[in-house]
Image (cartoon, rainbow, N blue to C red):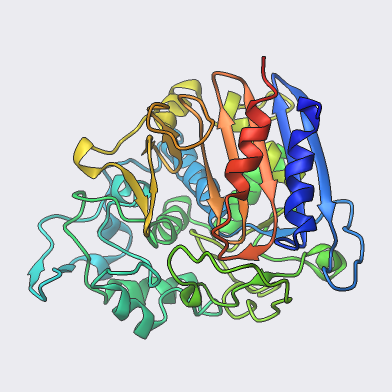
Length: 392
């Protein structure tokens, strides 16, 4: 097999095994397309073809976009890493820490923007197994209730105990939702408006938003897999079942006025997200407009976790070799990496099988897009390996 065909072959293999209804990919190297394509169908049962530009629920690939919005505000002089969450919302003034043994104690300092963008605030997710605070999140429906405003989500969050003292641990969490709340306060406008003005319009991301209008809804791919993130067991290795799920609307509304989140919620396309990924290489839009300065990009790409806070762990998954920068994972040591990558590679993924990476040293970006919620199959690793092996 020709090396240039391996990424397409990986995608076809997953689709032929009926593990995904469809997969789309795009890889660019030094400004040129290395490989791109689609495999599969819009509907796995009916065999209907994919639209030219499918729209995806990108789940946690929302996080890097929201983090970049915070960095933009920092460059505008409206936000600082040492600013405190309590400056923007007094409800977070008296946080308490619930230890695993049931002991409660006051937080020993306020949560900062740095804590939020690096997931070290003490917050959690309701699906983090073994976390003593997660059951309280489930009871309060911190995450699941997608129809409440962001402000109401913050009101509920402020009443929850912290899982640890701010700054002491990394725990993947609703931190980026709180960061979105801070962005709105610092920008003095809803985050969807700020994102449109500062990112989506300058980058030409016309199909990226928190709402999909009726004239585009036929391009939104159906969801497969779990209907509920909380129902996904840790490291679920059961075979995929390609039964369409239409019950993610409560968590991930399609066209709800005022719907805004930080950790998920955006819809996007492969072409749109590629525009964002390209910006993370240079800091500029296609027409040369500066979105982020080179010094800010360098800060974003630098690991901020201490040795005691490594290895990077998300739930029960250990991301060996990675650290965490300002809103993205960052590869520190390929001697620990479990799959083909490169020092400095950064990016993130979404719960419904979307994934992207940016490699500054190789001037490379890559995207893998599917819609299966809760998969533990190594699609992203296999596709990225197939991309890297194409390089001389």
